Amino acid sequence: MRAVVVIPAYDAAASIADTVRAATAIEDVASVIVVDDGSSDDTAQRAREAGATVVQLDRNRGKGAALNEGVRRVPPDADAVLLLDADLGDTASYAALLLEPLHDGSAQLVIAVLPSPPGSGGFGLVKALARWGIARLCGFEAQAPLSGQRALTTEALSAVLPFAGGFGVEVAMTVRAAWAGLAIQEVPAPMSHAATGRDIPGFLHRGKQFADVARSLAGLALARTLRRR
Image (cartoon, rainbow, N blue to C red; front, side, top):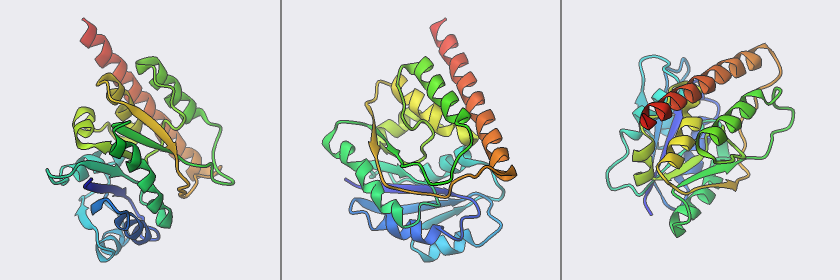
């Protein structure tokens, strides 16, 4: 299997090189594409030095838009795409676990279920909204509805594009995959990334995430209604 990794990155200079090197070391990975989403630091330079192909956006456009730019660069001979966050560091190597169900054909979309980082989190409102919305729209009961660590076959990728804007990308991806009749599987993976704390920046981040997820779910609900008419 020939897999290509796509990593959206914003001000991730502290972790991007380790993430790229760990992802590159996965046996089936042919290349790593990093989309620098308008960073103000040297994310792009460090990713390039670590061996990634770098796409630099002129301004911060959000996760969904960065992923859309990245997957456009996936070569046509790729069999699978791994979507990873920029702050995984060395633990990005565990993304190899996501490729196994693609290998044996048991799934076309695989989602990593990460352990809860110590001292993390708010009150679970965003995750609860995402889980509820996915179940209502397609019947899939997600353990990790917001996990950004995912593997898809290239056929599955075409069924879920374009990615939704902002932080609604994972929710929309799951729902569209289910609507397309794709097999979805969640697998435990001991990856870790920076936790969002219970401070003002953390709550602002979760507020933006909640709004993006709600917007994505509303758009999907409208699309389903229009399809049924």
